[in-house]
Every structure is written in structure tokens, then in C-alpha cells.
Image (cartoon, rainbow, N blue to C red):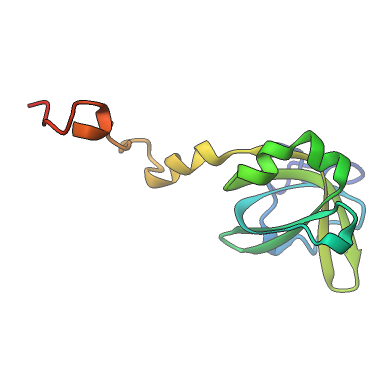
Length: 139
């Protein structure tokens, strides 16, 4: 997956997502895609409309900066998404690395696939009251 890139443009090309632990490898300004569970959403009053997200994958965390115009475009995903894929430019300030968001995708529906990576097990449909049957067992 990480060999699928063009050195002067994307690292790696979307829709692949770079593991957060490897965000120190691409050069500053490189376009990257990260994905992860939303740990934190911050929108400080002193930040002039900037929103900060912290995403976590199995290798670590990624800091995402969402400018006001990007937030307005992808508001629903930023506010409600539990699992996000973010594409943007890498920004470095000494050891601190941020992804400045350009595209934000809510991929929360993919969480169901984590329960059964082989596709064999799927969550069963609701039964009883949850299925609108007044609490009776259908059998």
C-alpha cells in the first residue's frame, strides 16, 4: 500500500490511508490520506473557526486541522462521524505533524466490517420489540 504513490504528488494516493505511525516519512506539503476513529473534536473560541480533530488508528494518532470553509463543506462528517478518512496536506512544525484537511469522508459504516473481517459474521437483524413486534419472539 505504501509503495502506491508518486513522489512529487500524493503519498500514498487516495483511497489508501497511510498508517499514523508513518506520518513522519512524507515530506512537508505532501498530500496524504489518513483514517481513524475520532478521539477528540476541538473548536476553541479563540481559534477563529478552526476545528482540530484527533484520529486514532492501530498504530497511533493523527492531528487534523479543519479550516472554517472545509468545516462548512463537510460539517456533517466532522460533527457526527465516528470513523473518518481525511485527505489533505502534511504540515510540520519541528516534531509536530498535522494534516490540513481538504476532503473529509465519514466512513463510520465500515465499523461493522471490523466485527467480521472475513465477512462471515454479520450483525443479526433485531428481533422482538426492537423489530417492531411488541416484544414477542417471532418463533
